Image (tube, rainbow, N blue to C red; front, side):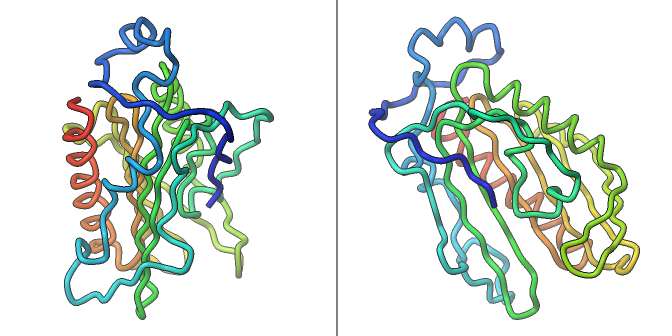
Length: 228
């Protein structure tokens, strides 16, 4: 997972309720960190292994959970050219070329090689709106692509909106030409100034259920924290 480096020497601040529109967000942005939560704040909203399906024996993976601490990161200095195979990675927030000010993430797997990834990114001013629009365009532009991380496979990615989850939400449903039963599902949702990722692999039906249900839990936690 590629995450934005943390800026050093920038003090954190608390957040108030998130605005309902980019125009209101811009009006509130005299202090660019007005609605930004620290990585430590965001980490308290993450799901734990105990929140994942019982009987699946998910374990948090080495090096996780992670967060950006109490400092805020700066803007991306050099834009990257997003590749479609990034959709098969843990999260693909970097495809927006809009750096979050802070983040928190965790990653789980079990003996059956089923995986679950969660991430919450907090953005300044109107950056979350820009990032979400770009992430949606990126995902929709990658309807079919080749994944060469291992034996080459052809991946089909279908996207659909998920109304009612956050302010703006998208689900990406990925299947391959060599495994039509397995699935790789990622739900991305913007809630005010924050964007959540909820990604799951396994049998397709189970992966969809897990990604969607856990996205709902993350969205509820963010809404309760921000008042949005």
